[in-house]
Amino acid sequence: MNFTKKKIADMTKAYSVCPVEINGEQKFIVGTEKKGPIVLFDENGKMEETIWDGEGGVMSIVPIPNEEESFLTTYKFYSPNDGYDAKIVRFKKVNGKWDMKLICDLPFVHRFDLLKSGDEFYLIACTIKSGFEFKNDWNNPGKIYGCKLPKNLEEYNENNQLKLDIIAENLTKNHGYSKVINNGEEYAVVTSVEGVFKVYPPRKDKEWEVKKILDQSTSDAILYDLDNDGKDELVTFSEFHGDHLDIYKEVEKNNFEKVYSYKKPLRFLHALHVNNIDGKPVLFVGHRGGERDLFALKYENEKYVRYDIDSDVGVANVSSFYVNGKFILIAAHRETNQACIYTIE
Image 1 (tube, rainbow, N blue to C red):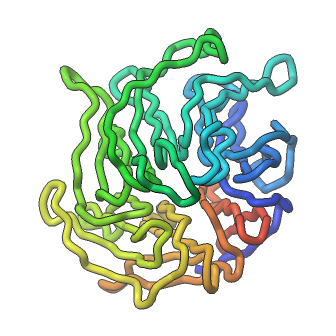
Image 2 (tube, helix red, strand yellow):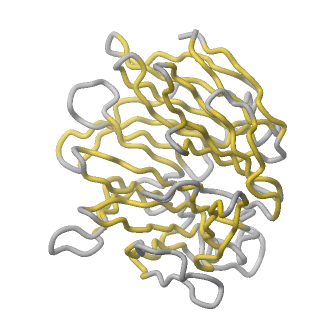
């Protein structure tokens, strides 16, 4: 695989990326970690408009199902040491202009998402900690919150905020999140010092359910069948913002054994994403320290093979989509203040 790079914007502390479909057209959004804009791009990476230019702190971007030009984001989460004012907000285009409305204050909210169960959608939100008394204080662990997504978000604002329930607590450095869609069922993978957890939204006759699947301090994780044998692999970065890339094999339900470790430490691992290319799973990995590489891992001939994509970029997050059969990788290079896309030659 050979990747071609295209820089699409200079964005200070570019951080979050999210493919969206608007009026039947593929687009994507990029947000910033610090104060800065939220920008909408077309499928080819052409900047279409600045949705909002303000406080930033956008860790997560989530389209609202069945609503055009409407999405949720975190807002004002700048770091684990500057997250007391963090919140979840909704952006919606009204009469040709973007409007921002508060959904709920949630100090230290870092990742959140929407999970579908039956005919309902549920909001899941993860706080990286619950408070601190001094810099780098982790003595107040994070939590997982959740609630059913209301059919109408118009009624929620600063004076009438969406109420969230605590699903799990005592999760130190509650950093990693990914969504799994398996045979139509959606659930979350959440990581912390205490391990890796599956989190299921309410199902028939069941409330929220949390299951630990790995007792290993973990910063980020993804579950995916990387070798096409019908069993999931669990990919982890450890410790928090750590240097170790490992892959575990599910040998029986929710029981994983390590089958691969990357050959050397990779400083400050952070970007983790997977998609299929030509019918085969490809894992995308990026780290923000050292060589600051972005690369792909693909299972070929019973081993994982690395394909270099870029170096000295310091990517925070990546995502991808297909348009007219063409694969496009979106990257927010936090350390070099760029938003870029990559295509395969």
